Image 1 (spheres, helix red, strand yellow):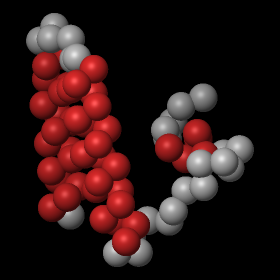
Image 2 (tube, rainbow, N blue to C red; image 1 turned 120 degrees about the vertical axis):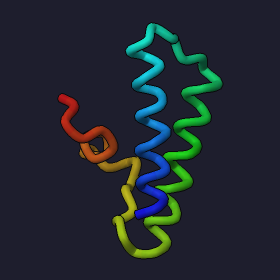
Image 3 (cartoon, rainbow, N blue to C red; image 1 turned 30 degrees about the horizontal axis):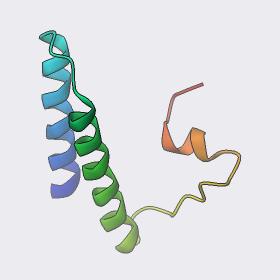
Image 4 (cartoon, helix red, strand yellow; image 1 turned 135 degrees about the horizontal axis):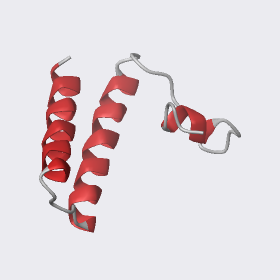
Length: 68
């Protein structure tokens, strides 16, 4: 839960910045992606999430819930 709270906090910080009109840089986005991947890796290693096969036709749907 602490990792998910940490990631949620980082996302909320980004959202506050966006609402304030601050445009994220590529470095900002890369840092957020790297952080999310690390959290996912820890959750996967602990058996809390299933691994996603990136070659699967539904992989994009799994990675971005709610997207069409």
